[in-house]
Length: 457
Image (cartoon, rainbow, N blue to C red; front, side, top):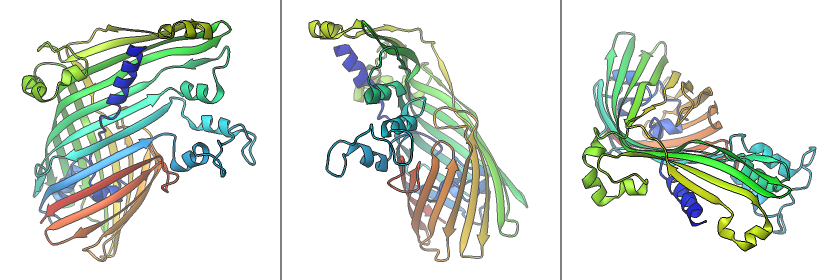
């Protein structure tokens, strides 16, 4: 039982480790990521490096502070929580068995239908470019940043048991997933300007800090007439230190009667090789572990040649009943773990993203923008579902631009954003907030915040 608690505790600890995706500054966040043609200077990196070719708009830029935080899930909103989990008007527990008004299902059945088949997933994390190490000069840029990604999911069967009980003869799937990715990147970007269009590219070195996750899982839980039965397995793989490469390609047009068009493919080449001794983390492991015992935290052998590990966990119950539980509670679960084969080097593909964008500027009053995007892969921060974003930026008073946007499709279904800035001669400050999975604070299932201070000339 103690080992079971330790396993769950380790899962929860890694669940708060981070989040990562192509970084978007506060201006792009306020535009709901409709940023393929609107980004300029150092902010173009990660979206469309071809925008560096607009040196007449921005010749020099440098990040002073750039911070973004996100927290989301795929089920629970504030409105849903307040309705079902804070009691009725009298403070009594909500009657989930009651029929929904005008529908032939109960509130309990409705709640279960809202949980996706692959379970409840939670994202949380932070994205931070390194201050003063993100600079664009003319049509060139040097960038760096720290990327974190976390996504955990719990099986839908757990919630079915909570709401419906463990029905005799019914089997519940115990598969779950976890992804934690932590890395730094160092990029060189350039644009080649032509008379009517620009080409651009970014080459990034990916220095892996660490990753951990459940790369395979399964098993079932069921109730038989003689007792409870369960057989679940989880293979937990982790590694520190990695070398990788990523390449972004972009194209845009010069303005055509106040219109502009562009497209980009981020990470058209992208991979990280983990777990070898030929990387920045491995070469400095003694110094790093004098400060933080990285391998001990991730349960990796402290042998100086070992930088990866994989463990297979098995949780079993067989004919567990009330009598047996009172007799010996520690024997309810049989939790076994054993080392699993781990290759010397683990290759991880870095997901690719496709973006297509357009903008229209009406005099010096406002800019209308639209973006179409999708992941070419369906893992980590990429999602193959198409996403359409539309946005507007009011620029009549250049010192105080105001932005807003909405997006449809993609991972979250519906997104809404708003942002504003204070733009002085050489300094810009921007702030933005984006709601995920809904257009209001009550309906949203997540929130994204961004703040950006940038020196421009």
